[in-house]
Image 1: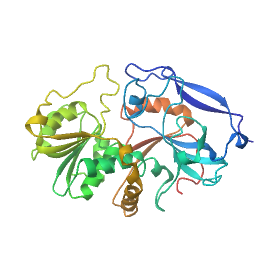
Image 2: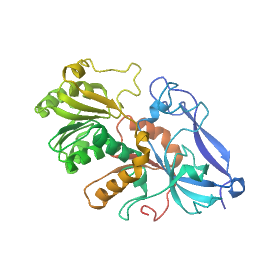
Image 3: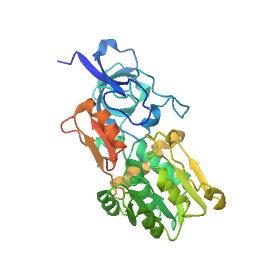
Image 4: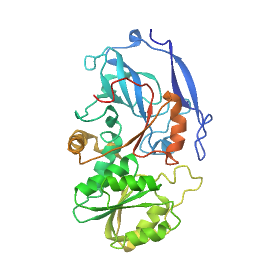
Length: 347
């Protein structure tokens, strides 16, 4: 018998710096919808996996950005993999698996146009639709190829290299013939990056990280793919070649800071004629299909590796998981398993 209620997590207050478990968000219990509640063209989606992403912290701020802030009392925004459990859509049958921006909720009524049927290669996992073939993989793809314009012979440095985006960006750079240095937050992550084919990797928590970074970048940087901002960005500016390309993907080191730290040597942008460019993956929506085809091909051929950190415990694990994301708990893609489906790890 279907449950009579379901839970969702809503924004209770805007954090001033760090997210506070039990205070920033609150859990809401709702009457469970049924097929009778659907209109034509709608589906009832049950969330299986929820994506946790660094950008989420910015969505909590009441500030101008590329998407509106999550409203107080509104369901926390987030991408999910879900199963259609009821349908009044001619496009999506009951039992279909889709990718959607349903948010932090166990159930959601959505228009079929807001659900994307999963397109994962035979060797892929269901969860790849949120990782290497999802927004993080696409961000890496367009960031390193379009914004970074990586080419054979380039020396590429990737900060946040053991995350979902950085690990893919570095591997793509290697596929294109670049030499790649990764920066990560533990010795275990450094070791993993080397198994991916990174030429070298550094632990930014090492006491002598700045000296090691300088020694590792003697040939100077052609492309810097930045996921962290802060110290890594400052160091990279000091080691940039003339006309280097800086891909400004994220700044996770600054998202919870009361006072954000910017690079003190920003005049290197002028002196080295650096092209520093921000980008948002949504700008490339018309090219997603082609990018997924190439990413899926590399995955099938074994040229692209990925790792997931999956948090158990249902929807209730999301808030603590988001806090831990900014503490570096994950290697690769961070997901919450909202509901397990036996035998559905693969499509």
